[in-house]
Length: 243
Image 1 (cartoon, rainbow, N blue to C red):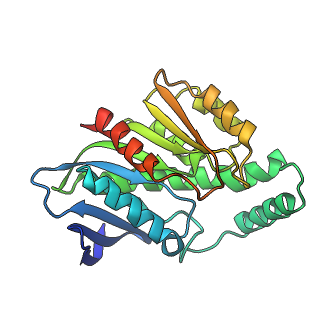
Image 2 (image 1 turned 135 degrees about the vertical axis):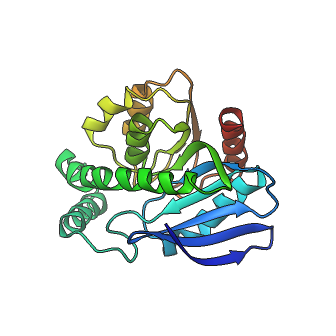
């Protein structure tokens, strides 16, 4: 991990850009923290520059509760090299959604499975590097999407103690079997009127998740209409399990 930039935000949060090999990322920590902080990994659908306003808002909310927060760019997004296969699958998905047609399982598999296979090892490598920093002490939570990535991480990464998953993306059927293996505490956010999400699939996935402690927060509104109070609820969820 190599830090490339640093800026101090007006609420005392320190934001540092880094690269992990060729993967860009951002780490946010509280400048007033006196002890190593628990860490929350901020998942997102890709495109750090585009997602930055929402990511920094989430990170500042985490820092106010005493958490460090970090994110990395997804494969084939932002300034990272593109995948012709992924681009074709995205185009097929857009065509199906714009035509109001059911999204074929084969499209979802082509788009999501390679992403999960590549992104999860990168997240784990980032976690190795982040936990080596003196200001990061763990335990670790995961918050956000892509939900299929969050499911895989919850199954294979024992350092993640709790996850707040955003149900706003398609999930291959093979990941439903993995979902049954998830045992860490979960909170799932679902926007009831999310135009790009299959609501019934999200409900079926929640039912499949194997965690004994799991809570579904369903709110009216579209994909980006998550109520602000959910940030407070998320902090309370992580405070129960990471502190």
